[in-house]
Length: 535
Image (tube, rainbow, N blue to C red):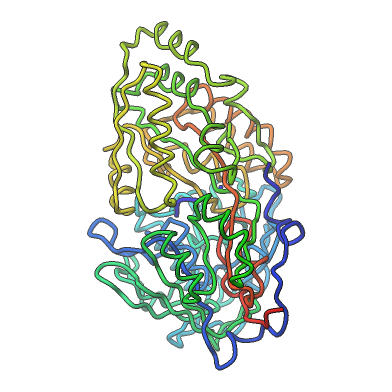
């Protein structure tokens, strides 16, 4: 799962330019030609993570994009906006004033792609299964507040929460709450491989190459019952080694759409590609990039070391010289544009100041230079990652206070597994939100079952601030608690926010619906894509 100057994506359809395309959007195109989406990443099965499309394991944006199209959830994010709407459910809502009991009524006639009926018992099975397997790579932490699930009838599901959680309806929109067939998926272990049995807008067939997906074919599901209006009959998703080869395929006409991982040079080039019948859509984004620390590692266990790094890192340099302003400096884990954001790191550390960092280390009796390895994944967050890491290395080492070496890991799944096992001292991570709420930029990283496996603990954040924020149905009112949490993170620096990125979708100019291609959590909505007639 993984996970980002920001106008909420809820407004993207109003603010972003609409591609010059017209004509019918019914079907994939004349003769049933599929719409082909290119993605610069790989979804792979490994020994440590054998089930990349099982909701109990998958927790990255690419796998979630596949699952959103094939597996239903009770609720979903709308075409635009952040308020959840019913999907497999006909209706859902809290049934008490404490936000501790949530009840849903399912739509009638729901079926899985294998023809099996989908009932409330399958919903209960799916949630119980997620919690039973409790996979450390997976998104189970999103469901931590569930005490028990009941299915009093075939169409009714009742969630009893152990504590109030006003964000629970949004969590039900994520693949963490995807509904799977209890007759197909084992109840206490992962469903290995790449097969998906769901009830979503599409059925799925994959072509494999070694241990990863080479192509995923999404075919409109004739038995689908839900709130999505599917604008095409078939979509192919092809996976490339890097964004350069993806762009090449787009310019040749081998693919119709590309999303994610665009380098700044590619953004500039595609902005001027209308003569090649290509248009680029820019959208506000919630992707963030940050450094994570193993706070038990001797090199960085003293928070003075982490504070000194916060005093040195130059975000403006990253945004200007690495990302050519396709992102913005980020001074908090909560990005700008979300209720509760505050520039906590800037307020505490100000502009980059090597002299202040030297003083911080000297007062803590830290011997310099502090030596450690900064680890990153080479092919998961785009081709500019290497330049970003080298820039951070230069910034730190040029002060003579640090002696940083860097190491790239090619396999994303291996990178994730080793990070969870505490094998890295400092490592570079990205985050696309599970839900468009400030809670999702704080809670996943703090606590016993945090997504990073971080040993960092803070009782005030865990036991007071997060629970208090979740009692607020009015999410603006939750901002006070989030601001306090951000100030604590800036003080302790278990995480070091770097930048937040804009989102881009490039497409052939006969493709319609691009303005709706990403939802408010930056999830890809392939059902919005159609093929029209180019002007």
